[in-house]
Length: 325
Image 1 (spheres, one colour):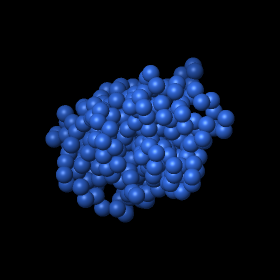
Image 2 (cartoon, rainbow, N blue to C red):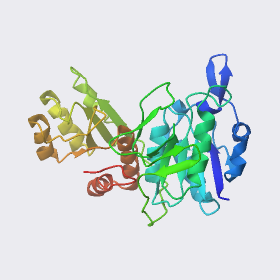
Image 3 (spheres, helix red, strand yellow):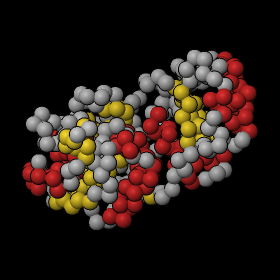
């Protein structure tokens, strides 16, 4: 029987009603009492490093999770993290960069309704996660609604439905049908594990809207080292902002072009408004990466080096299926 460490962090799955709405209150032991069949799937230990709504999750929490998994890596066959859904995709992406080439499953899950409610997805998601964590190696992934999604490819696309997460620009890794795991993409990574212990959270996201003030581009100069510009379509920046972009690059900021469109990714060389940026600045772009992966990967890359060439190399290296171009 496999030995799994259950890491509880709060979120809807562990919430109960309060005077102001749902709030995390259940311990990991409380969660397991709702799924007594878990004892037939694996041997379980539990830990609760923090107990918060995932809206409050920050990069410091990702480093806590990395530390727990690194210190316990040799003791367990896999890890299951219970997490709120709102920032679940960010945490899954961040852990994909902080813990690379792992042959032990690191699974994140949560729920759209608390585990204590009669009609809830929490019990199924948690049991599925434990079952998948015992099924073999897979790196960092999200198990939710019967789907297994690479940690760098997930996005929350529904606020209330049980099938809350989608795999963006990449197939699902597997699916779970009752007690059966159906794997679509084999995991073939035996280089690790490699653990990273640093992030630079001085990253700013600027979402373009028609008519945005030029000053918005420079607003982040004092508190960011990297900026992700979420543009339209395949990517580009209106002419009126080129002076501001010059200033960002002159100040040594890492600038990455992204797209507001969920599917199919960026390709800024297609149109003149993007093509001249590519030539003039050699800007990095996200291609088919998710925004969650882009932001967390930039934090990771900036945390490893200050050298622009090395940051570019790290960002352009495909990790846990995050980048295919």
